[in-house]
Length: 136
Ligand SMILES: [Zn+2]
Image 1: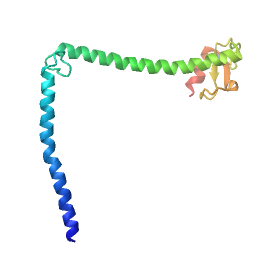
Image 2: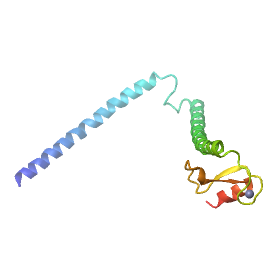
Image 3: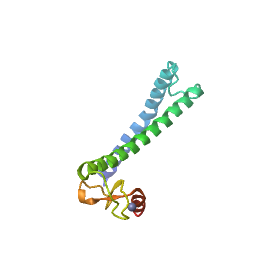
Image 4: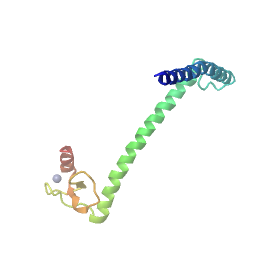
C-alpha cells in the first residue's frame, strides 16, 4: 500500500510545517502584545504594576456580578408579581382564605406553575400561603 504511506507522510509533513510556523507566529504576536503593553499607560492588562487599580477592577467585577444576580432575581420577582397583579385585576382582592376562613391577602397558585388560568388561583391568608408554598 504505497499510496497510503505516501498520503500519511504528506499529512505528517503538512502538520509538521504548520507546527513549525506556529511558534514563530506566536513569538511575533507576543512581541506585538508586549509592545502594545509598553505604550499602555492605563495599566489595562498589566496588573503587576497597578496593584491598586487591579483591586479596583476586581471590586467593579464583583459588583457587576452582584448586579447581574440582582437583575436576574428582580426579573424572576417581576414575572411572579405581575401574574399576581393579573390575578388581582381579574379576580379582585382576595377576601376569605379558602383554607382557614380568615381574611385572605394572597392569591396562591394551586400547582405553582403560574399559568394564566384564573381557576388555578385560590385566595389564601399569609400564614396559609406560606404553609402552602412550603409543600412545594
Ligand atoms: Zn388561611
